[in-house]
Length: 191
Length: 193
Ligand SMILES: Nc1nc2c(ncn2[C@@H]2O[C@H](COP(=O)(O)OP(=O)(O)O)[C@@H](O)[C@H]2O)c(=O)[nH]1
Ligand SMILES: [Mg+2]
Image 1 (tube, rainbow over the protein chains, first blue to last red):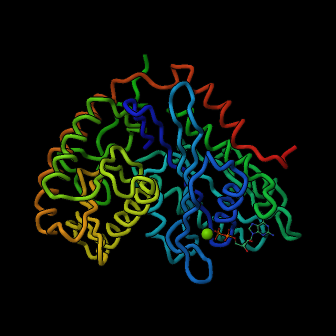
Image 2 (image 1 turned 135 degrees about the horizontal axis):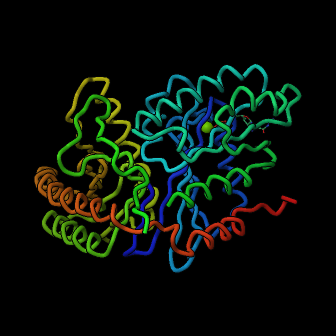
């Protein structure tokens, strides 16, 4: 739930990067963190295992600065993708104002993407929100790989609800900011 | 002007089989909460008294998403954004543990170090109050004072929710347009064409 602090003139929104394990959620946040000017970001906080897999979440606070006298802040989170961590994902998703669903475009990951997307829909619904009205954008990541499915195929299977979607290669940053702008605007325009 | 709630009029629902608490219950259709001066002042008064009476270091009221509504105190102010995210995350994961144990009453959380401790208690269904205190403060005292404070806080926030429903949407101001422009300006990558 977005927080509009009229007293402190601040607006906060929470955005969660969701998707199957290893699809590139953490890489998105790392890239964003590396490119945003120092004044507009906080530290990137990662709660990960020894092997760098996300255990709880990654967290990156972004600060748009003052807009019409209001300070606008977005808190970006990633969830741990492995099936094992479903309850943790529910915890991180709590109170999200918007979600980026990161899909791994590789052919063999299609079933994992579908399962993760179904789970996301369930978890949003369990929070009492309508999934179809919920601010959501999709990112088809790893488009650089030879086994990436073509966009029309990804659209057909993953984007049946026709939300804004973007092709990306998070390791090089391609599509990362386009995705970020889209979700931030969806969240802001819901205020 | 349009009300701040887009789905007003929906019947109340229950979540995870738990009946919503009478005060400060979670309203899924409320997509934003407007915190006004009145709320901040009232929460500050409760927090300050809590800190004074318990001789704690800092205190905060935050929502379950990890966003801080009011912070007061000297210690750790710089790191409060991260603290808020971590405490809300830890609380949410504790609650999932509680569900597995079919336990309804995991309403508090204690993080204990050699020097400092953090005590967190649920306020209604949507918020948390957290107190950071040192070894000179007695945990038992913090617990008692917190549980009293949560009642006041829940009432303050329940009134805020009610007022929030009747506020105009931000959409009606020029803010959204400027916000979108700022997003374009700031969230861009020099390597983008
Ligand atoms: N080839 C390629 N590899 C990627 C891309 N994005 C992420 N990866 C790699 O995929 C692995 C998992 O990424 P990570 O961000 O940790 O996934 P997460 O589990 O979703 O957080 C890492 O080795 C990344 O370097 C991409 O666009 N292309
Ligand atoms: Mg990760």
